[in-house]
Length: 549
Image (cartoon, rainbow, N blue to C red; front, side, top):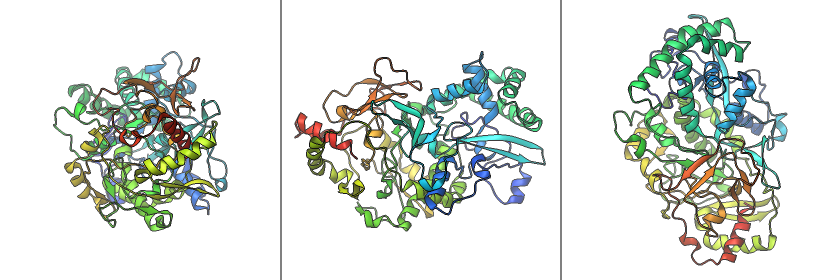
């Protein structure tokens, strides 16, 4: 069986094998499935952007089922109770669970600042934003279980920032990168919590009832009779194999390791030694604004639609057609394999829903920079950007709606940055993708280089470089030294240097991570030659301009 994030998901193997088939076969093998609770009674709007926002924020994309529970999906109530017992045994309450989840960087908004005007009020999530919940049921056998998985907004929703750079965690911005989500600590804590919790099964079940007093007798029986035996067996397997829930690290707050998760789903890490040290292709979560100008997706440009030529291809505003956006959405549906534990076939089945979500993604703009901008410096910085940056990062122009990207080169480059992420998506991984059912919608290749991204929303995207190894734009531009070690996660923003900040007296809203740039995959070198002929004043002008993007 494929097991990608097997402990983040509590391993409830209700079925014999993952995959899915005909309704009759699914019934015979005991398959259960659920739909996002938020969308169950939702009446879709006639407005495509409004529908897309709902799918982006609350859609399950077909990932709430017993197959996904073998990989990434969770039996939510039991896992939550285990976490509370592990992290807050003296306070078993929904408030304690919320504090614990906030510690991992999950957000509990009361407002979505960029919710579409025609979409009505944004629903408040039952759990954190990006934790998608649904209840799966069947009558033979009698099963009921609330399933949780991670949706788009777990990684792609961020706090807004006020004029002092302080985060407003109850007012979020969809499409901006979550700078604090710490999947590594979340994974490790769930494993430790489940090990401790299953050692006293009755206490764990009693805590589940206390935390979720409306839990039905049917769900409690499901947890006892179906979930617990399989959970204990899986935990024993992990203990025998060295006690690591995953063979690779997910990195630190604000980064992910999607290539390693994909390789595990495809069976490419089985039986290999040295996986933990080798598979360290960490990548910072990107801002989604203007991503439709790309045709090469991922940080290394490894994915592209089959109809595009392999050579560099400049796209302009007129090229962002409905067919182009649909092609990108088809590729993006494949991201559900490493992130939601879905099979390749299920990812293909999710394409129509992902295309619906892209109606919102294509409208995402960054939060306007909340601090002061020196317009004179920014004007000079615009000329410097055109000379030193636009050949990789695109051409921006002033429009009636503000500054906008109008042309993007879609190039691959080697600029001396840490090479590990570009190396780990190797030929074996690309070949495996190209043999899968997604091959009709995606062409994968090992590029060995990086695809410079659009810089729209760059001020919201600290820390910087593909692996999040530089804490500020000031350090990236050479206005100060790039630190060897720094903290990130739960931070405020320094609006002058544009980057991670922990000012005096500030209390982080999540647990900060330590970033050590001497570790494999986290090197902070490179991307300097383009600034060699710039004075410090030039660099300050360029920094001021970048605040406007």
